[in-house]
Amino acid sequence: MAPTVNKLFSNKMLGRASLIFSLLFFSLAWSQETKIIQIQKAGSSQQDESLFPGATILLRNPEDRVHLFHEGALIVSDRAYFYAKKNFFRAQGEVVFTQGDSLKMTCQQMEYDGQTQQAKAWGSVVLKRPDMVLQTDTLYLDRKANKAFYNTPGKIIDQESTLTSNRGIYFMKEKKYRFLYNVKIKNPEYKVNAQQLDYFTERDYAFFYGPSTIVGEDYTIYSERGFYNMKAQKGNFEKNAQIDYDGRIINGDSLYFENEKQYAAGTNRVRILDTLNQSIIQGHFGEIYKARDSAIITRRAVATNIIESDSLFIHADTLIATGPDTKRILRGFYDVRILKSDMRAKSDSIYFNETTGGIRLYKRPLTEKEKQVFTEEDLTQRNPVMWFGNSQMTGNYIELLSNLETKKLDSLKIRGNVFVIEKDSLSSDGYNQIKGGLLNGSFKDGNLENIYVEKNTQVVYYLYSDEDKELIGINKTLCSALDMIMGDQGISDITFLVSPGGDVFPDFQIDTNERKLKGFLWRDVERPRKKSDLFSEKDKSLKLPKIRGIPLPVEFNAIER
Image (cartoon, rainbow, N blue to C red; front, side):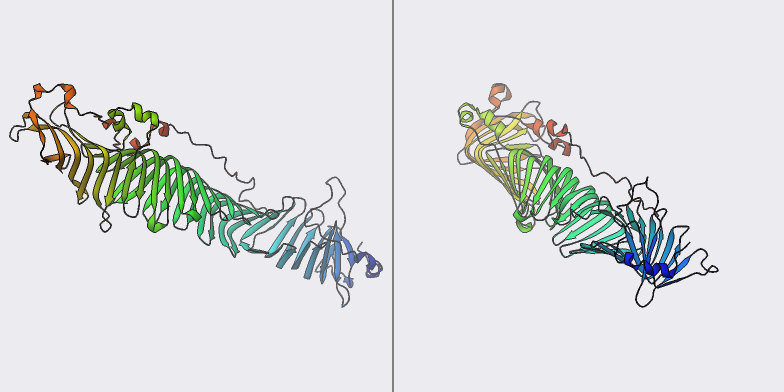
């Protein structure tokens, strides 16, 4: 039987305790007997069996509001319909729900079932804690499952951010929120849009599932699975992950970002795009240091640049891009290989000015011992090498320059131990050769047109008749300089300068060994012919590290009612 109003008033002292609803779910053990909801205070009570059968209608008066209590929960309202047999009530009118000094909730109406310990609050619901405020239209509480959730658009405001979502769950034990559908975070330093976000309140950690975007002052991060330390602005991102870092876009299987250090890194299938210079660097590990205007990429690294509407591919064990967008420099170290439709090259290192298109190729410096024991053939092997058509060119240092206005190749320079070799097209084992100290070449419409070689120049050249292409003889000449006209596939004509000395010898008069200049080395086997040739066998056998990954939560995308 429900208590009388007089008895209620005699128990007013019990209501002064202001005990609270256990929203944080410090509920009694399952083995304990279910406790009955207590009526601690009311202004008056009445019954209306026709409209509310089995209910005691509790009302407020000017001095006292209705106070109900159950297992640590205190609910204060203007009116309550209490069903003692069902251990259930519905509270109406400026409902206030409190838990000590740490939690307070207000709403217009609330239902609570003492048997299942489930509640529903609706009508301008506001849940307050010392560190946050939750606002939504309807909030469900499940004390036994340790959950609170809403299926109507909700807003959470903390000290620094405002978060909104269409649905949400609060996991009490883990102190974790799960926000679903149209999740948005507004912070003075960044903005977030996500499909699903798990947020741990104590550590300020967030886990993203589904399409998610974080926009900061000078960065934009996209991923479909990720972790983010929202306070420190750093985290890991996976599954179609991309970071747009002030004009440099980095993609990869796994990305790491740290805003304070102005740093980003990627692992496995990494791609860094420079939108201004139309260049791409790819590999399986990459780093960007924004403060230093630099990017580093390794593990099958290859850069792609557009020159003369043609793709220029550059491979190296390590590629480093430095400088601002208008003065970008690309450096490559160890096993440099270059592929372009009309040019191939290989060297130990490269310096490439992406703005001007200037390319410099270097060899690895010789050790003191190598300087003593290396033959001229060894030196040729160590030197950078470049191929234009059928012509092979080597030297201590090779430089290609472009026209700043047309962005097309303009000139070629080779310094020290210059060696130009071209396989004779009509003989089986003949090679046209030019050796000297300096080489200067010029381009026309992007094609190598003219070459000038000087300083102790030596030549071996196969001469044929114009009519029947019969071999006339082999020209062996010494001169101070020579000038060559280049055709589509190689040397078209040679002019000897400054008192040349030499002769044309019949084929049978020259021994096979004398047909090659000292230091001769045909390196055609090293020439990259297709993009896969840019990589060594070691590169091709590279095994990618396994990405541990961010697992999906057990209750992914599932809200229970």
